[in-house]
Image (cartoon, rainbow over all chains, first blue to last red; front, side):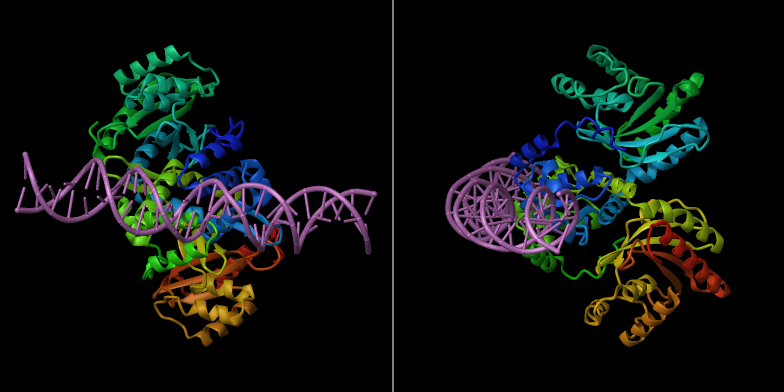
Length: 270
Length: 270
DNA sequence: GAACAATGTTCTATATTTTGAATGATCGTC
DNA sequence: GACGATCATTCAAAATATAGAACATTGTTC
């Protein structure tokens, strides 16, 4: 139900409270927190429930909700006095999709690879060191497979794609360590082993995760460059461990090739 | 490029200024305006450009942008100092989609009708009397660009669906008139004719627009009820005028039937 | 059906954000 | 390579959004 990234949320209250204090536009921080909470919630929520969950003052919370409702980002049921996400968020998403070249260009690659190897392919975008977001997807259609939805968020350093982000991002080791320690894996690697894997990732140009993030699943990820500097995107292949078998080598080669081609199309120096 | 609804936007400045003043949480109003502007824009924008376009104070604008960037709703390129929508908006949209039963239930109906009649089908949601938003879609031929169109906004009273919203909404005539006068049609009907069409829409249980909103296109729309009160959703068929021909009758019957079935599934009193 | 409890909403003093000018950075031009 | 202009950013005063209590409304229990 909940996002992989929202599962280990011990206390939104503390986080929201701190973020609100540090911000020069606290109302926006509160609004974003409310939108996320409503997104997480299975059912519409009342003012009080929202305020309590996020540690906000009810009256302030009410004003924020009214403003969000006015903007058609939140729906309000006058009968039940409950608030929920409104379809307006779709409109923003559509505009983002429309404007992002990675989506259009990545989709054919994803479709092709998904069909050829019979697995789930993702196009992923990193946003800072916090999260990565699934922005495109393709599935082969046959048999069982793992799947996510476009829009899903994951911690930035998790799994194979996390290794790519870390390997090519040139971040301070201390920062990586701090983030690494907060990750949840099915079979967590030791930090030193992980650092060694980063080195190999840099050599090979792609990263592999064999059952460490999700037991039984193999994830291969190759970075895509949009320009100089850090890669912001990656192509990801996800397969049930056994199903890949000897094809793993071919998959890796095809993935790297597709990622390289995409980098070229996006005008990046691969 | 731009939304149907954003095309006739003479001056965002006035609108934003008024909305900000009336709101008890102006920062949120500003933030929403910025997000919309960034969505509309083809390229990333700088602080100054955004502030000027919306009539905001640059420094305030900067703080809002920073807060939005912190929330991963807006991306910031440190090199060019430009802002754009960020993939975080996708996450909100995914959550909305996940939680809304109309989507899942409507999709099979849309697919079926699109295939049978060879046209484009939409699932639409009204949000107040301001807008309606396309929340689901099916096409007869190759249905890929599908997701890019979902999220489109239209004025609530336009075309066939607008007639449904007006006909079954029980709004004061004065309010309808005020909204009606702001609509842009290819071939605008007279208000009195339109009111007459509303009456017939109530009788028939569906509405038709033959080339009035878009010259050469026939639009048929049937309301879907989620509960008592006003219908919030509608099923919409869009076809090139000539292509429909004698099938129009069958389409109307099928549309009404599907809308009725959906209303039942959603627990509404059809 | 009445009293209670919980929730939503309004109100006002105060702490905060917003404002607009001043500063610093960056770009394009000569 | 230096100048001018544009843009992003900072800062302190002033307008204003926020917090917390009071009030109103809704739903629930006896």
